[in-house]
Amino acid sequence: MGAEPPRTVARPELDGARLLSDLDHLATIGADPAGGVSRVAYSAADIEARGWVRETMLGLGMEVRRDEAANVIGRYPGAEPARKPITLGSHTDTVPNGGRYDGALGVVAALACVRALRDAAVHLRHPVEVIDFAAEEATLGTPTLGSLAMTGGLARDALTRPAWDGRPAAAHIRDAGLDARGLNRAVRPRRVLAAYLELHIEQGGVLDAAGIPIGVVEGIVGIRRFAVAFAGQANHAGTTAMADRRDALVMAAPFVLGVRDAAVEAGVVGTVGVLRVLPGVPSIVPGRVELEAEIRGLDEAALDGVEARLGELASGLGGELQRATAKASVRSDPELVAAIEAACDSLGLASRRMASGAGHDAMVVGRYVPQAMIFVPSTGGVSHAPEEHTPPERCVDGGRALLGALLELDGRL
Ligand SMILES: [Zn+2]
Image (cartoon, rainbow, N blue to C red; front, side, top):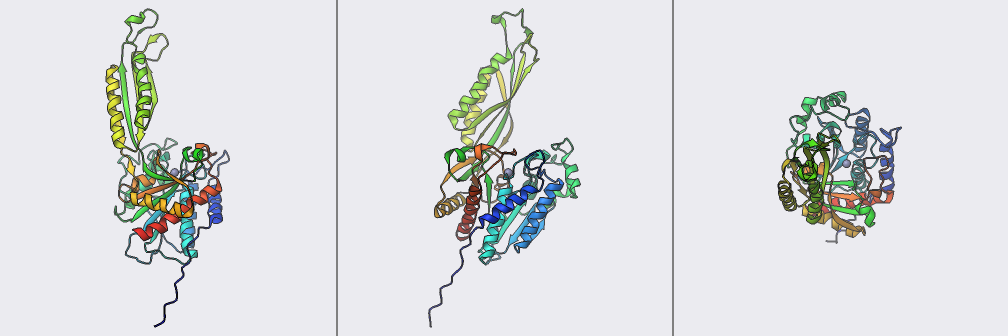
C-alpha cells in the first residue's frame, strides 16, 4: 500500500479589499445629505440594505431566509450537517445621521468570513450562519428588537412604544410591509446555535488611546437605574434665615458627588443624568429634588456594593433611593474568549480584554448560547454620529480576527 498523498487544504484568507468596498457600498444606502447614514429600522433604506445583504448571501451560495421581524439569516453548510451552526452577526440599521461602521462592519465582516471559506472551497465541521439583526438601535423605543423577537424576549408593550418620530413602533413595522403582531413568530428554539460571535466598533476611546487593534469583550455591562428623592421645605428665599432652611438641593448635592466616588472606588461607572429641582424658582428655597442615577459594570457584586452604599448615603442625607430598573450583565463565554485570543496571537494582532459599556444583540443572544464579541477602535471614541470612524486597516484586522476565531472554534467546539 502506498502512502496517501498529503491532503492540502487552502487556508481561508480574508479579502480585506472586498470587505472595505462592501462597507463603502453599504454606506451609500441611506447616505444622508445632512451627513452620515440614516438607515433607521424598517425605513426604506433599512429594507434596501437588508435586501443587499440577502443578495450577497445568495451570491455566496448561502441558504437565506428573512424572518417575521426582518432579521436576515444566511447559512453556509458545514461538513457535519448535524452540528449546530456557529453564528456571526450584527446589524445594518442605524440611528438617524449615524455612522457607517456601527453594526455594518460586523455584518460585512461576517460575509467576508463566508467568502473566505467559499474561495478556499472549505466547509467547516459546523455550518456557519450569518445574521443581520433588525432594529438593533433603540429608534423604535426598544433596543435589540430583532434579536429579542428571535429569542422570545419582546416586552408586551414593545409595539406601542413611541418610535423616534413619536409614532408607535408598530406603525413603522407595518410601513415596511410586515405584520407587526406576527413579530413573535420569529422566535427560534433557544439553544439552536453552537456559539455566537460579533465584531463591532468599540464606540468608546479605550483601544484608540492605547493603540491596540483588537478588544476581546469579556462581557456586556449590567445597568441599574435609580430614582432618588430628597424632601426639604420650600420657603421664601429672602426671608428664611440660612440656619432655618431645609433646602432639598443642599441635601442632594453630596449625593451627586457620592455617586462619582462610589463608582470610582468600585471600578464601575456612575452617572446622575437627571436632576429636577422643585419648584424650580429662583426666589424659593428648593422644597424637593428628584434625581435619576445609573451605574454600569460587569461585576454584579461590585454593582451590589455600590447600590448598597448609595442607598445608605441617600438615607443618611435625608433622602430615599429606589431601584427603577436593572439589567444584569452578560459574561462572554470563556472558551470563546480564549479562541479569539488564540486567533489574535497567531495573526500577530495585539489584543486586550475589556467590557462593553453599550448593549448589543450579543447580550440578548448570549442569554441562551455562548457568545463573545470582538471590538475594533473607534477614532476618538466617537459613534452614533457622522464622524464615526475606524481606520480601514483596523476594520480588516477585525475581520481577520473574526475569521481566525471562527476557524479556531470550529476545531474546539
Ligand atoms: Zn451597533
